[in-house]
Length: 178
Image 1 (cartoon, helix red, strand yellow):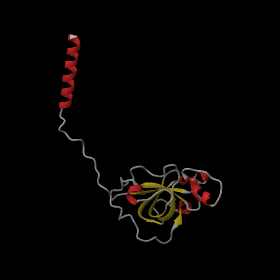
Image 2 (cartoon, rainbow, N blue to C red):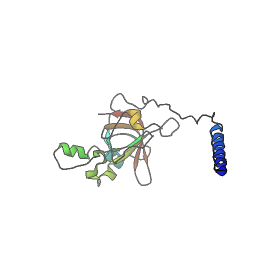
Image 3 (cartoon, helix red, strand yellow):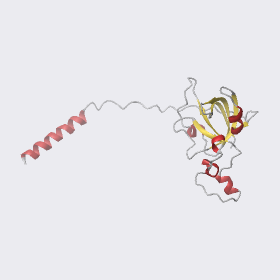
Image 4 (cartoon, rainbow, N blue to C red):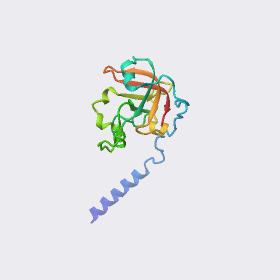
């Protein structure tokens, strides 16, 4: 019994000391600052718009481009916590469009173009918005722009190519069609 009381006393003291250990320090500050989307939003649709497939075929690295596409291309076309997302050429038909046309295609996530995955590799591009220091804006594109899957967007920016030929558009402007 005496050993049990000693053990309880030791544990109580340990908990008391832990509870008192410099608890006045506040946790590190988390930046809750919201990014202003207005510098990226275009009031009207730019001229000379091309689709994603045409841009992938013709745009060279560092070319100025204006590309139209629908947000999608995967189960999650978003880059979480960043102003970046995938777009797909408007010529591809989302599964929800096929349902509207009466065709038999059942898909809970029509923006992944699951009925046409064979066409996706040549019909997709990544869009990203950068700040003045060339870093991707750290605000989720869905929150920043109020956009969602399958919306048509026109992005204006600069083409970037990786070694595999994938197209990224570093956007400096966007017009939302829908």
